Length: 224
Image (cartoon, rainbow, N blue to C red; front, side, top):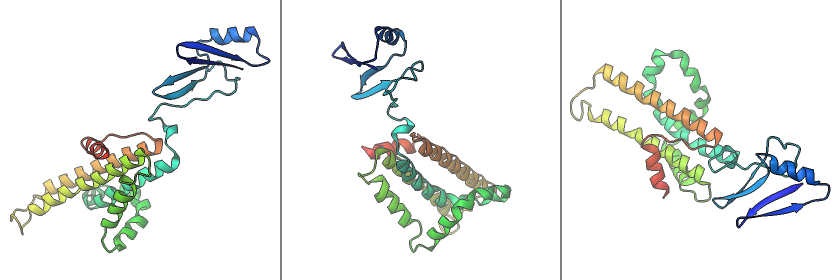
């Protein structure tokens, strides 16, 4: 086995018994010879596809790769996204009225929805649990905290359509939103929410950051 290490611009070699000069020449002639490279303070070991028989070499992906995020962190990062999805169910009625077969995708959420419905303060308890337990928990990784904050901000965004709807009510402005406009608004909010949830769920499952317009920027600002 031969280790080639670059340090201070010089190459240092260590030859172990059983390695011939011919083996050394083959390693140097290979385009993807073993090399330990120091990049951004992280030692990355590259392995040649032509040298699969060699032992002791491993590949460590760059930051942001899926292998750098533990499975437990991916699960923790995903759970807060259930909060905006449950909060947005109120905007799904017109969508499921038009596509009743699609309601099957809500079946896994029914137990969680029932638990949240029994809570005395409704969504407030899950909201503060996600905020304090994930987004502001310095004991968790940045991946978990960023996704927790992004999920919370996504849930806060859903408040504004409700405020808009309450503003244009008979009790306040005495103006009723036309049915077609209300239906269109509900469908746009629900479909957009489902798309955002799906993207973030895939991102959490693969250990990658998902950037949502405006929401991600706000979440990033909260992380500083």
